[in-house]
Length: 269
Image (cartoon, rainbow, N blue to C red; front, side, top):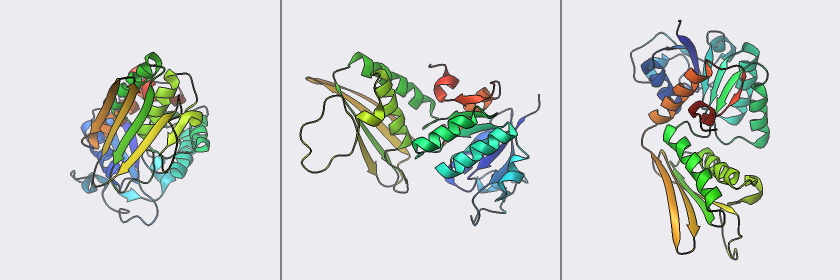
């Protein structure tokens, strides 16, 4: 069977480089194209060499259509507007689209999900870490079993991260809300300041910390009377996200067009 030809979006960034290295290390995958935003200093450079590998002759371009024409799949850890546009292109071309973009609005999420019904095989996750997705399943179970306990989610990332709470924190919040059959949007409390009064029962709190070069740390605190449960995950290298994305890509290759999550990939549904 021929290797799956993969295009990498945001190839000049840190996650782009991690994805390029992961493609090179994964049997059955081949780097076919790489692209970045117009004006990026990475344009014209060899994508593999920029990622610290031997040059592979794949130059980073800003011509997205030309890049996608060479590919069976696209890996996308970019920005919400770019991911929505790529989802439409993936649907038009019948491509696999692996989306690790965070900070998406409800409208962005709906547009990406809809593209899965138009011919694309889309796997989207707030975090592609295998351990983190297992953590989310544990959070859902704890929220269901300890229905009267308070839930707080604390996350920390590097000082260049643009969105808060992180996509991963929101993913954990969704898991907690699912465990209690409630809407996260209606129960989330995103930060507290001033005289806030007593904690409202049933809410799911978020605290976002930023600093240094922290790749990602998440803790879910489930606090009850006289005891608390703490569930956490620490990301030590971006390669873990890229490795999870490769697993999702290989899994999606055997699926019909549609929208999927890492729960589907890992059989956690």
